Figure: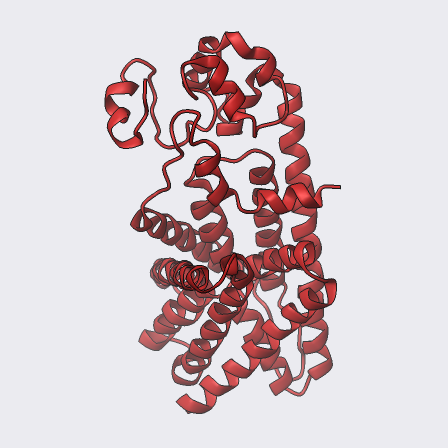
Length: 137
Length: 246
């Protein structure tokens, strides 16, 4: 990549990452508000599963992006992959929040549920990625 | 021994508003669009940083030679450590309301990534290296959990140690850990010399007692809501939107 491409790519990654992070936050806000309306303190119980939803959605989109744009090594498709794949999906998915959720789960529930949650996140993410790949290709 | 306290502190965004209700300026929650912008800004910065790390530490992964994607691993480790530290600090001394959306949800959340981990793991599986993929996933999970816990404990301890070292500014420091040399905060402390002994306590949840004794509610603690710089001009600027009663 040339210097200009790197700069443009970094900018695109930033735009995608900002949009993805905002969407992740919005998903969590809406979900927690819905859960709070449904049940007592449901918002706190709901938190990890909203992170999981965001992660699964990101993996699904990444599968589509990889199938459509991933093989490109240059040109608009590569920049598009930077925007969608690295930026948006990377910003939408998060490992730190998931790890934080696991720690919260350990504090509140049991250790087994927490470890299961982490494994479930990766498993569902892989499944969503494959579904995205299959749908798009 | 911390668990009950930690469990209570986890609801801080809910509790703070009710907690400080009778003791001066209610901690005004930021409007949603501001939080969204903060998260987006932090996420953009985090994603660009991640991209920079990936550019600096390239990973070779050909079908015959699968190397662990060190860049992603480092990014995730650092992000988890950062979010753990931030959460630990904020649990010990609640910060200004923009800190968590910008640095926590935005920067750390956008910096770390799950989708890339899953993609790399799937690529390893697809390249017929399932054991490596499993090891990579396990390594990521274990290291990130450890980093989060380490950050949580370290941040909490650091925040408490800072509080203990500067007892006279303890409460002012609870508003902004790095900014207790802020002239604004110093004025606050001078104002409130009647209950220095209360400020010396590490207990931050004692708002009602403070406000009952002060008569000038809550100038010091949790004056987070705005970036007011000067003491004198503050009242007429902020009185309207914070609902502060002089």
